Length: 609
Image 1: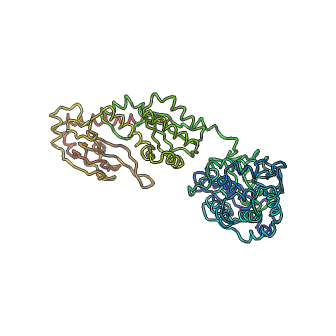
Image 2: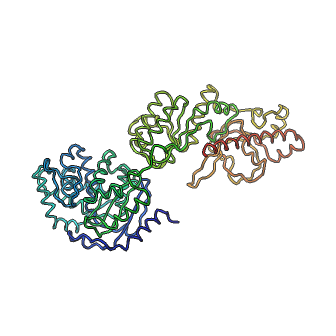
Image 3: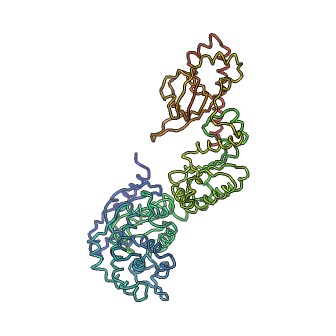
């Protein structure tokens, strides 16, 4: 079954493929060879999902779409201050090849027009012309997630006909906005415009900008996150030339077009769009590209200035250890401690896009409730993205909590890799010991519970052996009654990691755990396993065999070295004849145990609702 997103892109392609408006660019002879019916659409999310339809793999040259990416490289090489000395950021309302310089400073108005792009190319670091080109190509390839190349025929065609751009280069040299001979810089500009890409590449490159400079497919950093805002700002105000104002008003995403028919649009934190269709309007923008982006923006609510309030929905669920416990089955004594102190284990289940605004809401809530908490769990499994400002806030929160001896535990999701990278960079050698991470919420809760119980029962060995009289299923039974059952036991021992019960095994034994810990596991779709419960000494497992005799429904594994007293189900049934009172007490205790488990499940379900 295809995705609804894929279906919608196909609908847009079918809808606009028949448009015959616009003309293929001819001022560069090689561009005139493009087929006007070529039409591709691609959309890539910051989570790395790719959707594409039509001629999404048809190669064409990037042209002016290269400008924002090279501008970002110049910012990294020179810093904002030096770049602003050479190139402004004001929109002009002029065509892409206009000669537009500030009358006072002599700067090109912005880096999206040719004059500004040539000045930007002059700021790329490199010991030689070849070295500068290699850096540009490596940067563009990192954005695209594959190695790109220069289309030699297009470059030759641009070089042969690019007299106006050479004149712009000399003019920039006259105003000291280029250093040395301007011709090599103009040639570098021709080469960056002649890089061969496809529609999918453009969408990945746009999604990389949406993902704070990290390619969502390769996880490689194409640009430092701190400069992405500057690149997107000039794309938003200047990327569509004299159509920029209307574009940002109606479509509302930073964008850039190219005369080969390509167009990119970026919705920060969410996705990137690439469209390819050679016929251009009078302003030099792809006719079909504008139509597609307009439909996507309107129907998918992608306008940058029409976002939902991010701060109100970041906390999906707030709970505590008193309402939501781990799957570790506790003794009566341990359960009493957790009932009394479990509310000090805080659980925050977060969702959506974590930015400064949404993360600040979480921190504010934790700060206000901190007096009630000893342990704080942040479950990030449902988080769609996280940016650097949110990472910074969580780092600062962790440092403050550590100072007051209140651990902050993280349960990361697939979309929160940036948090790990940020913590590793900030913590250095303390990363492993300070950044407490658990694969799921359940082991994080168990860690908190264990520390809470250990503090209350200081000095008690964690894995003590118990005698038959300590088994929970023997509650309210006399020593004589316990002795009648105990003489039927057979002692079994298991090594740590050994399987005690396999799913599907015949249910013919009841296990009384004398020493160690065991866990109940069920297989997951990804080939792993998920824990349903963990039992400690004094508890019973395999009890369902006593009730229905059906094959085992889960696997039970020894977490530590384990010793069990095993009662055959046939011997249990035989108690009806010789000691019916004992069997009744055992069944009553078994029923009470199952009722306690059911109440726990109901309580946790009510919290989730």
